[in-house]
Image 1 (spheres, rainbow, N blue to C red):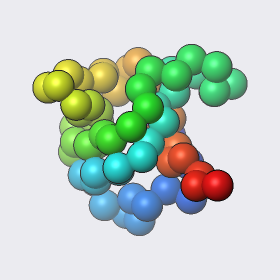
Image 2: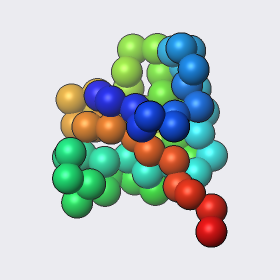
Image 3: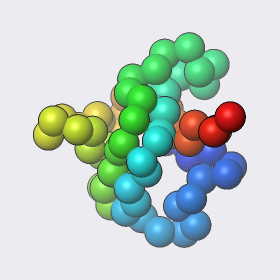
Amino acid sequence: MVFASDSPFGGRFEQTIDDAVVYGDAEMESVLHEGPVRVLVNGWVEVPGGRYLSPHAVHHIGTRVSE
């Protein structure tokens, strides 16, 4: 999994992002989730409702840019 260059992670391994976009591919065509996420130390991505996305399914996570 790769984080966007403007990622707020800053070297930390567990982070909550309020307005994220989780992509399943490098071309950013496969959006797996939009909204709040929590990335756990083991690489799993927790989304609302108690669901988790596997680190193998997630290509990268970006943050939405406010207009």
